[in-house]
Length: 161
Image (spheres, rainbow, N blue to C red):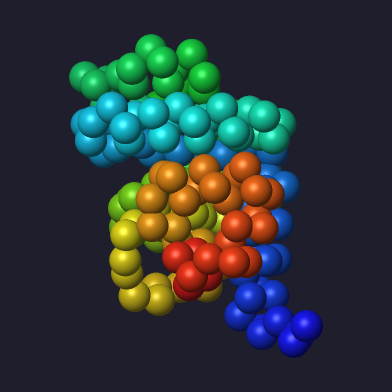
């Protein structure tokens, strides 16, 4: 078996670091309007997090649009006041929290500035920073959670950027 390349070793380490964070925050608002299949993937992701012993937090996008009850029953809904305030209000360290979201500016940059590891759910994108795992869909994130990261090793759609 040929030795794995440096990028795949870096990716494996990032996946392991993410899967060992005890709390994940998720910004799923844009996915909730995308239809029943995507909402089903969101529910499955929350269930997979809970099955791994990870505490899921749903960041409220707005007070006017609370998450559907099928999601709020599976995760604690917290107001989106920024990552530094979230860490303080929940008495967490940045090392305890990973964040999942679709927006580069609102999710990736803001979370990285707060010292969090990030999973960027985006179908494509340029390499934009170190320590960010990009998956193409919630379905692929679910595969990563269920497989414990082994799916990422055999798939070309997981990217450490």
